[in-house]
Amino acid sequence: GVESWHLDNNLRSLTDTLGINFDTIKQQVSSNEEELIQQIKQNQKEQLEAGHHGVPLSVYKSKAFFGQDRFKDLIKEMEKDGFRLNKI
Image (cartoon, rainbow, N blue to C red):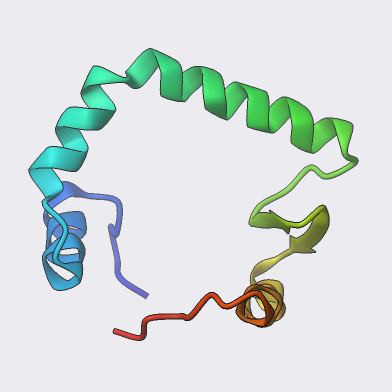
């Protein structure tokens, strides 16, 4: 619900809340940009090959969770394996 969520000042505010250093993330992205782009392209290719063509799509243990309304289902599956959601 944040307008212009993708802008650095909004992302910095979020990472500060999470205790993550925004400048470190930006530096890592910049240093690894080509590799990240290749990973994104590979993910897109695999998504299409699996018969999916939209976002958000999450896959856990070969089970697809398509759409934001499936996030709760994804979290439940992950919690069965011991993952815990940290609430902000």
